[in-house]
Length: 323
Image (cartoon, rainbow, N blue to C red; front, side, top):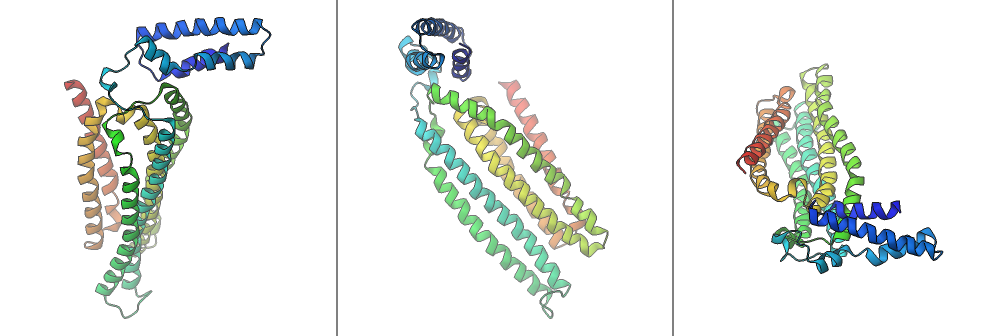
């Protein structure tokens, strides 16, 4: 009996909390319990009885349609995607998360290699006799060699995502599939939290490499910056990969950032992020390569993150008050 109740709870968890659906859920539970007791009286085993009950009453989508329950008027004209489409979309998001994560990792490590090669040439460790400009040129070539496959990965992942562009116009997910998605999302939440904590810890601890290296002199602090960038690259990969998986759940379930009230907010916040973060990277590189401020310019990223977080929060609060 508890299995039947849990089944209904999971199915209706993904539905709006309306009086009509609450009554429907209670009526279903009563009918399913009656059928269960009837089957038990016929000497059916518990597993057999539960299986028969769920198979007879389990198609909640059809039942809601027959009863004429209107869940979302503005979604009536949206296409209903199949379970196979849901699986394919989630697989695509996982794959593109890996591709984009690797691409960003290559870009950041390419910057680290640029700094490393330039420093090694300047100190005469490699390329003795090379001029300072030659060192910069070799470093830039290495950076572009890393960026080229990264761009290819970005383009390829974008092409894979393009296949599901039609979903942005709106869609409906069958209630049974939505219920399974909700269960999987609940199970994934703990994994996502661990990845988030790990990534944040790596970012917070990354400046330690600069402090540790600076003990051996100003020149050594540059190597600390290189280690910092590699640690940041690992953290960013973790954020992108697990964030992409989480995004697949929230998009299909239409929750968090993909709820209707947040979609408009995300457009503005995303536009600001598209300008702010590249600008922060440019300032970081210019201050390091031109003014040799590697020992302190790492602080650009935490400051940018704090300011961006403040903007996002304030903007969201203002929008909610206006609405």
